[in-house]
Length: 109
Image (cartoon, rainbow, N blue to C red; front, top):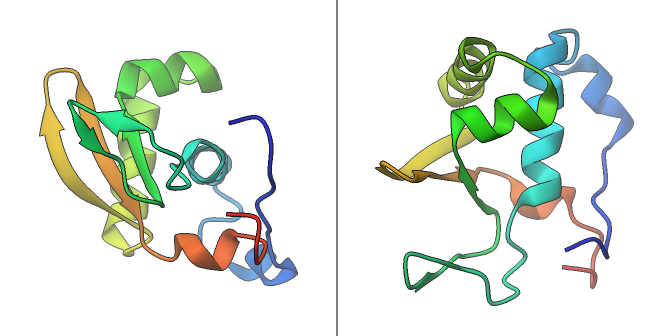
C-alpha cells in the first residue's frame, strides 16, 4: 500500500472543503487508504477500487481528531457527494470515493 501515487489538481484549492482542515485531512487520508483493486478484502469479499474500510475511532486516532470531528467531516463529504456509504457493521463501514479515478495517475492504479 505504501507504493504508488495519488494526484491532486491545483483546483482543489477552490473546493468547498479545502479550508475546513478536518474535512480536507480526512478526504486526503481516504484517498491514501482507498483500495486500488489490489486484492484487499473486507469480510470475505473483494474491496473494489476507490473503496475504504473506515471506523470513526481508528480515523480519529490516526488523524489526531476526536470521533465527533471525524463523524462531522464524514457527514460533510457525504452531504456533497464526495463519498457514499456502501455498508456498515460493528467492525467499521465501507465508503466509496465518488471520483476516485480522477485522483489516480494513469497506469499507476
